[in-house]
Amino acid sequence: MSILAELHKDLLDFSNLHDTEKKGLIDQWYRHNFLALSCALKYSDGIKLLLNVENFKDFEKYSKKLFLFADTLVLRDIKKRTQDEFELIQLPETNIYDKKYEELEGKRIPPIHIPPPQAGMWTSSKIKLNDGNEVPLAVKFNSYFPSESYDWMLGSGKQYLQTGQIVYAPFIPPIEVEQEFLKQGVNMPSLYDTQPLFYKDYDWLNEKSFASLLMLNLPTLDNVDIATLNEIKNDNYDSFKLFRNNILDSVQEIKSKFGTEDFLREIKYIQRNKIDDNLDKLEVKLKKIQKMRTLRQVGACIGLAGVNIVGLLGLSSVVPITGLAGGIAGMVAESIQKMKENSELEENPSYFIWKIKNISG
Image (tube, rainbow, N blue to C red; front, top):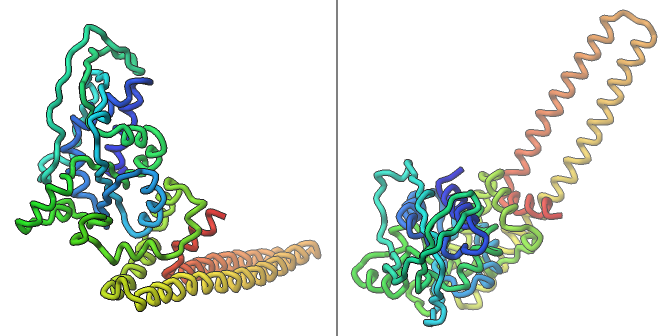
């Protein structure tokens, strides 16, 4: 399990320590783990996209497509909050799960945005957690995050967080702060080894090449949930990288034409020649392989039938043994041929998306 996956598992486990005070538990977990989570993100491998999210439903609409081109999606909540959204929450005061992550010890922590200390008060009450521990209960006057963020993390967002590759990152400084850093020549996303995407009101940070990806048609994703998609990626990572790099290289070549008629023609070319045509070739290749395998299986059955007939005729035992050896050699040859054929399929840059299509039915 990656360190990011471990951290998110701990977050979800911690939020389940009580049935009603989950928001307070989430605040507690983030208070203790801002540094660890930011550090784990910085030192995780692969392509990481930084997304500004105003609405989690909108994020879920395009998340799976973006997940095809990135190892990790990093979510910065940019929802404009009103005073009413800083709700009063009850806070179980426990640090019994203040876990240390040894592999992060000594790592340099990137600049982070930590919510300021907020006013609250102790109560005379105690609360019993689901694990049997009884802890003091405090009241905090303002929550760390907007209500929608808690609702997402405790609802549909669970399946995204459980992948360990989609990170809710309130510790990344807001855009206004990032803009000031940029004026001083400091690229804030690069400090987390991330690439920015969708900065709506800040065109100077717009990544045209990645925006182009949303125009590609990958309809097979509709029937695959994010957890399954993540599992397919991990099980077929070499094929995933081949597909991703093939598409990213193509999009990178046309980004200078963004907003022109030529750009739309180039997108259609990528769709037709880099995705659709490769998928068609895979289907043709697969049908050919299946036909050849059927013919080989028929031949193997005939050979084994011959061995049985020899045995029934009462001929020397040497003959059936020799025939059986031939049958084993045939099965070995069949296995080697299958591996070769599978390798040929996997060499197609669209094999990964074809795999998703076939798994999703």
